[in-house]
Length: 137
Image (tube, rainbow, N blue to C red; front, side, top):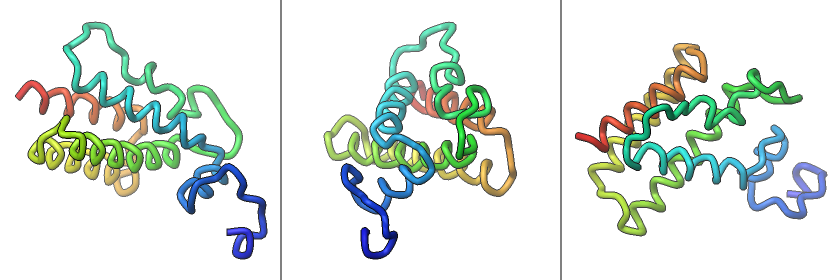
């Protein structure tokens, strides 16, 4: 990576980590948020949970941060969420059917961000309730 990008890459794991760092997105924080998101989506229904507030770090427009938009951050979050879903399947914590439904929901959320230019907070909230609905059903 040093030869190609001509930058020091110590502490950065792989290309994905490099590009996340370039966009000023902390990979560890992204992983924590993905785990928290799935914990809330899969857990018992908790009235009053505001998923947009819980995930406010994904929406820099709500808390402005230099160098990144909430669309970029949410796209990276969806990638991390897919990685986390794969881990749940390998651990035996999720069934292949659940993984298929969740993956379809995450792909749909990605399309809503990239193709339909929908507001990231609305997409995040819709994804959350879609995953909750799948857990109940």
